[in-house]
Length: 354
Image (cartoon, rainbow, N blue to C red; front, top):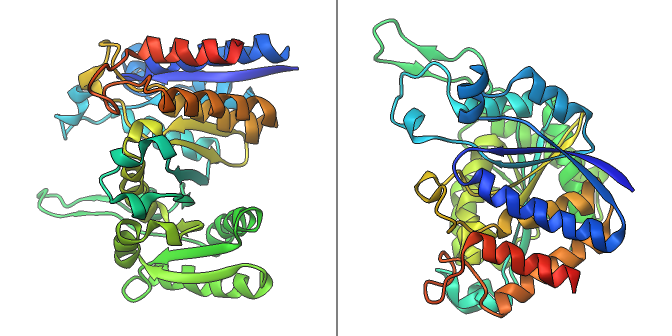
């Protein structure tokens, strides 16, 4: 089969980890007789440098017309340290989500048996942890209007807006995931304080009546944050709004022992995008020390959910698990005898070929 993959390395460590993901997908091509047509585009700081726009029209067209999008990372210190910059790399990420209709971010959180001792939580808490966080991605305070600052610069404001349609479509995704797993859904909100959260809970309760095979519970976001640390094994599928999801998924990511192990997918109306949870990690850029496994696992998610190549996705996951079992890892997981980014990528490639 032939597939077109929009390939967006982005900033920081993005290009070097993406190189390893592409190498792994080439190995899959060879083994299973597929052809992946990698079409490269700029996004983030590199796109600002080249085109003056963090998400150029050419990149949008590339993504829109592809079978799936594989994305690295966005962010550059020269913008992080300049709060007055009018064009920022992160604007490219928000624009990309909006223009491609990527309304649902799906982040699996699962521990690896060989890495339980790497988690900051006690072993008995993280053993067999396996849940999915579904974050609404194109609404809420990140996109609401109006926003801005007062004329004297001493006040700033965002507007948190959600419509029934936005909430219903993300809850539909969440109920679907719960039905395919252990049939338990946790709705996270702040309904005791926020009007938008009360609308979320009201609609969730309505939809729960239509999905009686799913056990639904409700947590305020502060309690959910505590439960992720105290009892992460209680969760199966969690769904929440944009900002809460942003914070909770980063919190949950440390359970595995490294953010360099977590993939994610963003699905929507035009295409699906797959990316590692971690950021651009500019301090490591060009040093061949970054962990490529999250983007490699994101490529596996892409194969499984967008291209419906389940056996090929399972092969990649098997290769990653074996590399972890054998301690063939980068420095974020194993300081002693740490391997380079390229070495880990090549190990995965060799395993698939064998």
